[in-house]
Image (cartoon, rainbow, N blue to C red; front, side, top):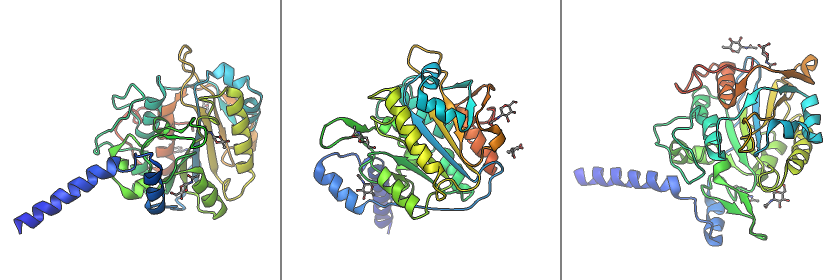
Length: 311
Ligand SMILES: *[C@@H]1O[C@H](CO)[C@@H](O)[C@H](O)[C@H]1NC(C)=O
Ligand SMILES: *[C@@H]1O[C@H](CO)[C@@H](O)[C@H](O)[C@H]1NC(C)=O
Ligand SMILES: *[C@H]1O[C@@H](CO)[C@H](O)[C@@H](O)[C@@H]1NC(C)=O
Ligand SMILES: CC(=O)N[C@H]1CO[C@H](CO)[C@@H](O)[C@@H]1O
């Protein structure tokens, strides 16, 4: 009896530990096997929010505000929404910014290394789940749902998907849960969910290292963003009534003030506000506070508590 209980406890401990790193191999056979079996979920819901019923974040990489707003395509997108002209990233390098926007704290992370945060540490997706608000991450070139490593372009060897640009993967509270991993998906799944009208209410979108400008330029990132977002705003499966889309950058260039481009788009922006600017100071923690206020989610007890929301 005791032996059975012990072995059950041991097994569940082992499977939890394995879950947190089980999907890191990039060997072709391991990827193919996981692709065939990894759970994928496309939850939907319809929880009414105060200002928006759907919230979509799209993050580009490493450009200061002045340089981004000078790009013709990013400048065009600013005319289609509300441009936040005093919006600041948290820190350098990338990873702590992504960790911060999910958990309202950098949780001590200051680098881009493979990090694991204790499973007691919660994120915005835990608050969303508690209120029944569906969510998914969409990460371009993630080889399958729940993959936990970095992934290169299989033909060119160039970096395509990187874990440091995934806001949830450093949290053991996400990676120890099969159903949460199943909601960390790629762009193939995004297109499928879009076509099937199965997009969730909260999503975070990370283009690959080419399209987000990291390994290219603001010109490439701006062109990608305009084309991707324009197509989606014209799609009624995406831009449902009260959809708020936020396009921003994880951080500025290392030597700037860390002021970054941030634009609010979508059907939740009233037409009278399209093409306007707002100079109130905001930052990555404002995003989580805005989402918490919108769906009355409560808070994480971190830097979200004293933060200012967008509305
Ligand atoms: C995207 O993820 C799905 C689900 O895991 C997988 O079947 C598909 O092969 C992936 N697409 C690409 C291009 O890797
Ligand atoms: C990123 O995705 C685009 C398609 O959206 C593709 O053309 C490009 O090769 C990808 N970049 C890498 C490094 O694989
Ligand atoms: C930005 O400006 C402040 C101060 O006028 C308002 O209180 C906010 O509601 C406004 N926010 C947006 C998104 O326009
Ligand atoms: C525009 C709007 O309805 N804003 C509300 C968002 O939620 C907060 C907190 O519940 C309210 O104070 C705002 O009025």
